[in-house]
Amino acid sequence: MAIIVVGGSSRGAGKTALVCGLIAGLREFRWAAVKITTDEHGLAKPIWEETTAGQGTDTARYLAAGAARALLATPPMRAGMPGPDFAALLDEIWTKVGLGADVIFESNSIVNYLRADVCLAVQGGQDQAPSKASFRQVVQHADAMVAHAEADKMLGGSGNAKPIFHLAALERISPEMVMWLKRRLDSRR
Image (cartoon, rainbow, N blue to C red; front, top):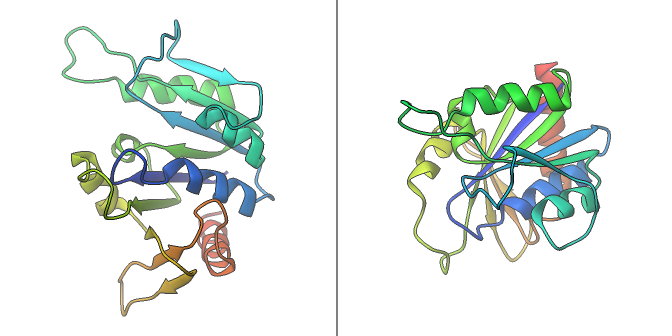
């Protein structure tokens, strides 16, 4: 079982593209990809499963990249609670995908409710909207940062510094990033 969380600085930062890149780059895993959103999308249930691969929606893109399953999830609001009920949502997700499933979450807020094997923070370009407040939480939990760049490279740091992966295309993660991810995920098994 592997759990990856991808969070991002803003809408359009590249979270979905990176999730697709991870799915395609780590094919030995049978990924269930879950996009968590606060938008209800007119759904009757908090979890909806995509069944058709394509480019029309983020969940369809997950399937096109090779995910075994793709879910869109909205945490329910509960009377008397100050915010969304992420614990209840996670219970439903685990029931749907199975406790031993390999799962990639696209969400900033989920980092406060589960322990991921790898957490990646995507920093949008300079032309992106200002960073979401929830991005600070992702950065605190992040094992590595990911940013757009003209050419793929990895910037290492000394000591406990987090690596920064600069990717020319988030949909195609670099061989260095694949090796780093495999080492991280293998060490958690």
